[in-house]
Length: 243
Image 1 (spheres, rainbow, N blue to C red):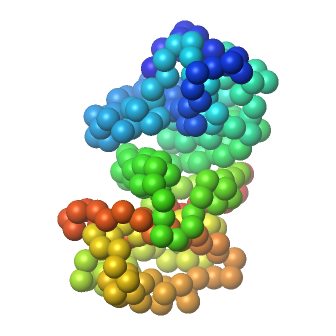
Image 2 (tube, rainbow, N blue to C red):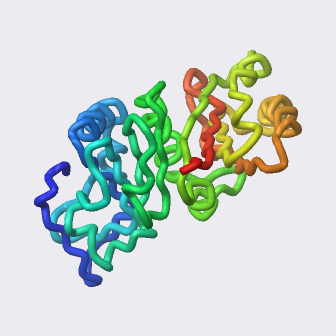
């Protein structure tokens, strides 16, 4: 799927639509994508990367990009009026933000070097798998996601284990997350019974009182139960870039 010479059929008479499709542009981006395929498993390839020549239509394009590429490097299949710029989401893993290289795209997210791979892996696991692939107990839909990622932002993610020590662990969420920008707060619990969730929400509600008035936060609680060892609370933070 990393071969830019593959030709896709964007004609309206197609057998199947692909909601999201991920491509990598640049040598570093392609190396990272290979590691993500190995770490995230079958769902990652099937949900985001499976395009079979000539019969699928891409609705939203996700671009993993490094320092050495810009919007001119998009394969021609994504460069005409049938793939409008407002349907393109860029995840930039370059050393410094370069939003002007991706002028006109709907979402430009720069991911800092520190913990960069972990941030990327969490992004795809938390949103594109956990949230998007299933219903939530609390409504968070694709339109909410577009509100969160719109424009030019720096992306940071803090993910902590959901256990009896949650009250202490939640203090690890960086203070800057509370002071500006937009957040997606996600809870993946080993039990969705009311009593447990009420206990989980106590420290989260306390944190909510610390949010600055200029900070916008969306809440998502997964409607399916996770193994206890995998349960978590995570916050995806989108801080506007000053560029």
